[in-house]
Length: 358
Image 1 (cartoon, rainbow, N blue to C red):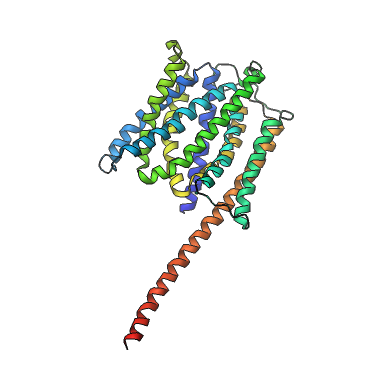
Image 2 (image 1 turned 135 degrees about the vertical axis):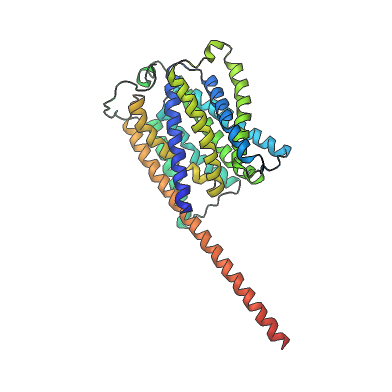
């Protein structure tokens, strides 16, 4: 039952990410400032979580040493301020589908970082190790397919954006130069690296400060302050700080309450239960759902390369999940065997002592 719960939460996180990417892209299509958008979203998330954390955690909140607070501050800088600002700018330059595809570098990057930090082990002589490595390779192959092979566009019955009053991506993409598209792709790669590092580093800090709700709330407060200064430095025209259309309000509200407040708490819980690589491997699911919904809601054109790349990523997802599940099951069996052997030793020891006494 606990395994099923972890899988369901991971799928829910993927769905939340899809909604956030779609609504964010719709807001940017109306001309919303990316840095101002990120600041409003962080601030709304902090306001949403603060009273909840105060009511639920005020009596049982663990002490917060300075070094742990500093680590949380740096995690907020990586996972909220830097990641969301770079990703938002890249999303404005490209499309929701490409953003979801590039963010799927996270399983590869997270796996490599986890191995370097000693949090994951590679046993190439076992089926589990081969499955994990093969899954990562398939995910990478899927990403490269989507990046370099567009193929013929699939027929879509939606020709106008259903979200936002600005231009749809199919119209805006013609105004984006080739250099802008390359820059957006490069920025997405940096964003993926930042989030991957945040996911790996979050685990040890959670062991020092196990209150996941306060952990998430503190990150939101730190991220709000950091994002404010970034927005202030990049957007001096205060007329650009107005939210404007209804889709902007919806995007900020959803991105703050659901996309950050709820999602980050669920991510912390999942990382604590199964580790960062397990959560990262659900990124391909986000891509597939984003690809489908962006076609209907944002009128983005889907190429054959996107379908082929998405299929490879789904195959990689299930390959890695199979390796992780078998690894988890084997570790449980080993723990039971160790426990049984300890019990046997305790039973044998008294009998030996009795024999020696007689």
